[in-house]
Image (cartoon, rainbow, N blue to C red; front, side, top):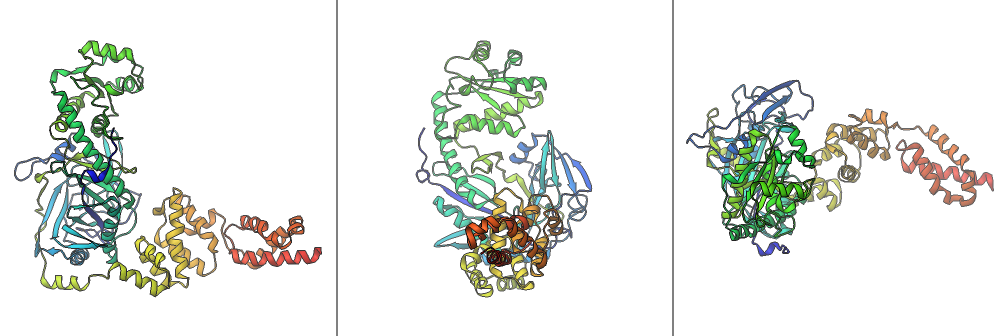
Length: 636
């Protein structure tokens, strides 16, 4: 196993940024994009693949159709209508989304088309009720600067966001329609060679240009990065990795995918050395052989009336488990493909005996189907109706790796920074004209207006924040890059509260609670604003803020008032506060005798625990010190 060095493989990267636009309605209807977990409408669909206008099937759609999923949709009339249910034609294009797209195109110096043609992009995974996503190519070309680097723009599109995945149960996949149809801008960069340490900065610079418009949504799910990755010796193969939610993932994803691609080239050479070919006779039903096998996986499959299939690979011993680099092997590629079909997994010869499959099981298998010492094999448990499809796809994939090296996939980023198989890359048959929407004409006046509305640069925006609100550069940068910039400005302009304190709460306190595993999406902007109003009116203390936020972000309360009640937080008047502190001082006279005024330390902890967010630390400190001095005077 070799050590992987990314500089040796010549990596090229292209970014695709998908950003929701901050409009009051969806792209082709008047519905307000409100997030909600309450659904009063439920219906189901079975999507199927169809030919393009040229009579061709898109490979990605064709592959997805082999899953044969039933799609269950959940909707709320407040956030979706008959357009989202595909029971009514799309309405006119949202004007706000159109204007924002033109401003962003102008900011990136991209060439806007005078006529824009809505298209349909085939999508049959269920995330669109129609079986396609509406998209429009707005402009091509342009660039932006990321430090000293000039990054070219390939294209800018305006399109609909997809439905929100709610989960899967067996052969049923569930979606919520509240996000379906939200205006989304897609910006694709030209491919560029890159050092790993530069990727985050390049993506961040583009995101900051979008945020400078103050016309894009903030928060989790509102922006995502897809990454196109290729290597020098990959024969021009570009792998698209979807779903990079965090910028910190980018570096890991690019490194892993480059390593995987180069590792597959090494594996390809190994397979070619073995002169392997597949024969259909090498696939056998071995269910009866494994009736007494102690593997829980195999026994569970047999109980479900699934078949146990063995696939014989002549001269392939050691290939499935061969590791050109750590974590890269043919067996893993096959396992990812099998899981795509909802099958738990696959055993290969290089990892057995293991998982309850014993040497005696293998001896019987080898004897039964003629596996020799230099041969490899796979053992697969699958429903009868899926066996032929799954085996065919496994063989096609191994043959492709043998002949070409790198299968042309769309892959999904994982939280650990790895990538896993999602589907084949789509082809030209995926896109065709939208027949329900006429071409959109862009006038010179619109372009002139959009150029006038190009926002200030990120640097100028940060300077404005520093000067206007008297906050330091680091805090200005943090609040601008956060999802709370608009809320921050609203709070400090409407409520008499120190801007530095507000920014610190929004950037640090909430982030710290998120790191503890709590969900900031449960904390709405309106509830945050309400909390600062209560703080200004002295109905709560500063010390109670994190306690209240924690309660809401943990899902224990929905509103500030409810959280205050559940955590027993309410401001204590000065007379009651004085009495509580006086009692604590009297009950700890021994500590005061021994430590005198230094007793404020241990007593402060006792008082804060007793009052927990009901009074400010400064007030408690002053009253405690006063009562300690009073007690000392009475003792000495």
